[in-house]
Length: 370
Ligand SMILES: Cc1ncc(COP(=O)(O)O)c(C=O)c1O
Image (cartoon, rainbow, N blue to C red; front, side, top):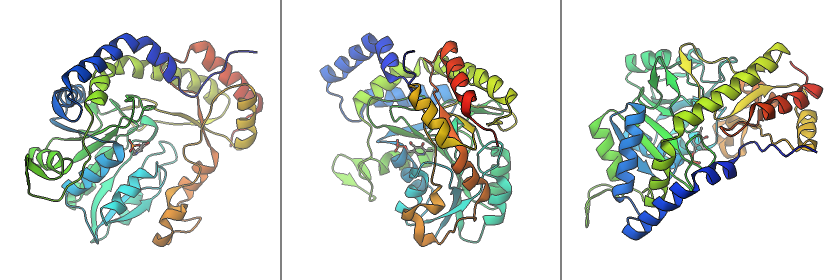
């Protein structure tokens, strides 16, 4: 029997970086900069430099990052925020936590990202923001979204939780809209050893407001001039993320190389995979393929000890949590079709060429294209 192939291999990544990581963890413990402090500032600066964006505010996680960005851009009760249902629940959860209403629109069938035409039809007088999600690490068609938003004075918050250093027209996502939000959940392209997140922006006032909001609305030790949150980042997470940031380009290149191998094998057998937005460079947080017989394929992969996932089987407009919004099956046909067919294959920088070939061999034994 061959060795198992996990969907991601955090163990291999840790083994390689262990000496560097343990050294910085010790440094943080010795300095006792446990919350915020110099390690968080250093990470914010280095991450912003890598992205080419002016300001970054490290925070507790990617969901907190979305809530902070929405708050800082003034989104509240009675506002509508347009986004996709083909995403992780946090994107829409954050909108609801700000008192606003998510308005779900369909995705483009090729890129799996927000369909700009659907956005245009969904804009009303109450629309205050759009959240394009760079799902799977694949950038959205940002020019179309930004043009529309600027004409109508609508804020754009990029959900970059899956897209660290992905580019659109040569610029990193997260610096294109009014704000960008990142998650450093352990399995992400840049993953912490716990929860962590960050908000990016090129606007200094938005940045200051976010820094204030994430630390109890504090302006000085005992003075709070707005109601905020405790959404601060830990020093340990920041120090570990700074170490791992130095490997991010290398990791993303390895992901792209693996994606190219998958693309070749699967496309030539007639399978539908991501067709990236024009002028974009995805970072393949996940590698997805559409199949008509997902359960059978999953069974086959499992019996051959190959990891897989489904991102995401139930679109948000059909989740019980959002039932009050009144959506019905059939409202978002492209999203619903994708939800029924997408399968995520193993994808991580540590995956070898032989492993990709083995995954493809087993997949192609049984999988049926559309
Ligand atoms: C698209 C998307 N948005 C937001 C989040 C939320 O990030 P976190 O889990 O760090 O709160 C995630 C994380 O899985 C995500 O994939």
